[in-house]
Image (tube, rainbow, N blue to C red; front, side, top):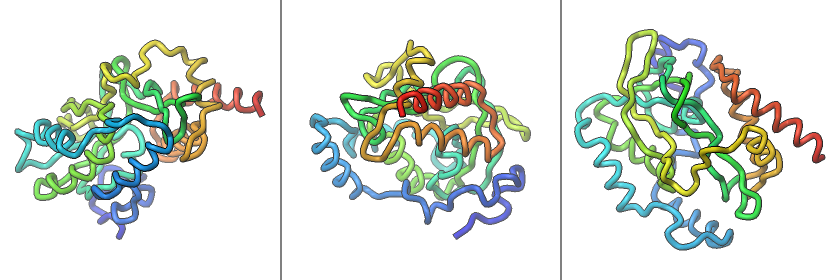
Length: 245
C-alpha cells in the first residue's frame, strides 16, 4: 500500500521512490532470527554472535525511555532512506553535522566472509552527512521501533543516539544509529584505497560487497543526495573490480 501523498509534502521528489513497509523484506518478526542463527552456524559464527531479544529490547526501552507519547524523528543515511520498513507520517531532507557516511564496519557475513571480509556503511565522527529524516507518529512508535531495532540492532554494532539534524523546515532531534567505536567490527583507520580493494573482492551469501556499494550510490543519486566521498570510493572499487576480472 503506497504512502499517503501528504507524507512527501516537503520532499515531492521522493514520492514513488520509497518502499512501502508492507512490501519491505526488512520488516520482519522475531521468528526471522531462527533462520539467521542457522545461517550463522553454517558460516562458522560463534554463539552469541548477535544481540539476544532481551538485551535488544532493554536497549530499545532505555533509548526511548523519555520519548514515549511523542512523535519520533529518525535520521536515515543508507537503506533506511528508501526502505524504512516502518509507518512514516512525514519526510524531510536533513543534514547531520559532525558525522559522515563511511564504510567503516567490517562485514564477515552477508556480503563478506571471515576469510575475505567486506565493509558496510555507518556513521562515523567528522564532517557532515546529508540524508533524510522521517517522522513516526506517537501512537505507532512502540510497535514500529520494534521492527527498527530488529533490523538495526541485531548485531549490536550501532549506538542509537538522539542528534540534532538541520532541515529546511527547522532543526529536529532525531534517533540516529551511529557506529559503535568500541565494537570489534569498527575499522577506524582504514585508508580509502584499502577499503576499495576489500569491497571490490568481498562476497558472501547475499552476493558481492560491491553490489551493496553500487546500490547505495545509485539510490543516493536517484534521491538527489550528494556524497563525494562515497562516489570516489565507488570509482576506486570499480577500478579494482575491472583489474581483477
